[in-house]
Length: 297
Image (cartoon, rainbow, N blue to C red):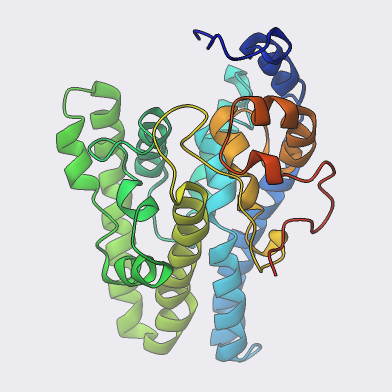
C-alpha cells in the first residue's frame, strides 16, 4: 500500500497491520455457539409448537430472534475466521456458514462470494452488491426493498462478474440450495400453514430486514470509495449488542480477520491510526469501549 506523505511514520500501514494481526488470532467460539445454537433452537421450535408444548406466538418471537442472530456467524465463516488459514479446519467455515443461514433461507455460497465482492468494490455503484442497500434514501425505504425482494439482485452480479470463474462457480453451487429454500416452504405451508408462516417465512423476512439495515445501510451511510473512507463509525439510540455492534463495522472492512468480539479492543488500540487516516467518525470513538458507550440519545 502506497503511503500518503501526510501520514506520519508512527501511523504507517505496516504498524497498523502488526497491531491488527495481534487481534486476529483468537478462536471465534462465540460465533460458532451463536450460529449453531440459534439454528438448533429454531429447529426445535417446530416439534415444540406442533405438539402443543409451546404457543405459536412464542415460537414466532423466538424464531424472529434466531433469524436476527443468523447472519453474523456466517459472515465470520465467509472470511475464514474459524479456520484461520488452516486447511484442516476449513470444513468448520462451511459447516457454520451453511447451517446458521437455514433460518434466513439463504445459500452460503452466494452470500460468501457476493460479500467478497462487496469488500473488493465497496461503494462502487456498478460492482458492489451492497451498493443499493447502503446508499438508499432512508431506513423505511431499505425495509420496503427487503420486503419486496428488490434488494436481491444476484443475477445482475452474475452478469457483472461473468468473467470471474470463482464467482460463477460459487453462484452455480448455490442454485440447488436456493431452489431447496424455495421449495421447502411451499411444501410445508400446505401441511402447516400458520406454523410455516410464523416460524420460518416471516422470521426470515424480519431477520433479513435487521441484517440489511444494520450490516449494509448504517455502516456505509454517507461514505465514499477508498480503504479508509468506505465505512464509518456511528452512534445509535439502540444498545450496541442489540445491533451486533455494527457501529464498529468499519474495523472489519479495514482488517476482516479480526474476529467480531475482538473488534472493541482492536479499535481502542488502533484509534490514533484511524484518526490519522481520517476514517469517518473516528474522532468520536470512545477511548474505552465498554458495554454501551455508543448510544446516541
